[in-house]
Amino acid sequence: MKVIGVVGMPASGKGEFSSIASGMGVPVIVMGDMIRRAVQEAGLEPDDKNFGATANRLRAERGMDAIAQLCVPEIQRQDAPLILVDGIRGDTEVALFRKHFPGFTLISIESSFEDRLARIAARARSDDFTTAEELRTRDTRELSWGLGNALKVADLHLENKGSLPEFSERVRNLLCELGGPP
Image (cartoon, rainbow, N blue to C red; front, side, top):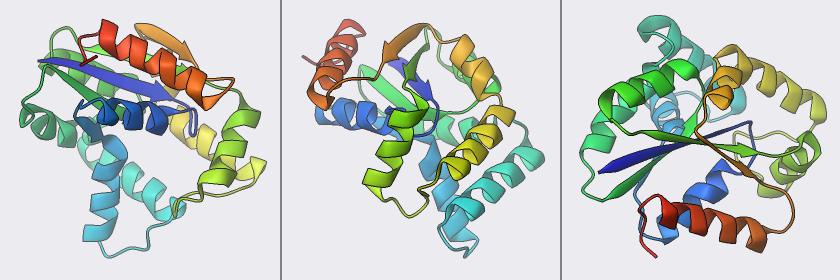
């Protein structure tokens, strides 16, 4: 089993990368789902404020790799040649995955601020927002978790600009190179 991870700023294309992988039959473990589950279990409203506060609380209680710790058993339950972890936010999470899964490969998705803001406005998720100021605030919060460091230690870099079909083709090709199904 080969485990790969995807990292990027909010709305850079991690979810699209994961959707393409899933469509190819690659199991996807979404780190944000671990936080969403914790928000739900706490009976909180599913909004950006509660997701951020819950992520901060988990990290304060269990360490900066807290969300990755919750993912490890989910990954180990998978029975596939290639498994994707979506939503890595820090270098301590990368270190934990590299410790548990030798050969772990981290892929960064790179996208401009303007493109990311436009995607957020278009996708209308319950935990999203629509202003540049809110995106800057979220960027700052996630960078405080070590996201910038995780981006720096990525093994591979994939640019997400241009059309969705172009990005999709680059993702499929990369997944095939890494051992995913054709």
